[in-house]
Length: 195
Image (tube, rainbow, N blue to C red; front, side):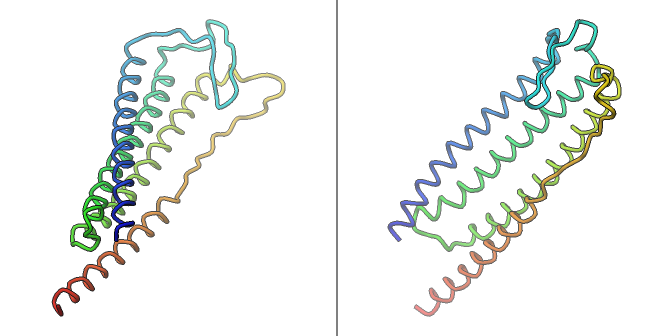
């Protein structure tokens, strides 16, 4: 029990640090998004992944709706991820608090673990929707500014939607853990009643 309490205490501290880090990233994403829309910084370069293109002045209009949609979709994606990370860390702190106090099988833990599974499912769904929005914004951008990619070597450009559905498996594992905790709570009640 002593090792369990010590481990839970360390995890509680880690989740607390991650919680504030996620809040910082969330605030930074909101501020960066607001600054992008307020400031008009001319773009003479464009970066796609690890590739960076130098452009002439007429190639890219930084006031274009398509470019602003890409930035907005990207910032929303970052903000959603940070917000859900903060929420998950807060819920994990709530799970670790009774464990570090030596009470691993109280009723709130089972409910909190189940809520954590719900948060993971909602995050996965929101993340997938945000990825679709980002892909749509890129499609609009390529439709308007596709001419900057045109040369003798590029025959076509396709945008493919990819999504990671690992969040479904993660939520299922968390639901299974919730079931284990709820069963442990029932066993603890039976044990307390027989004593």
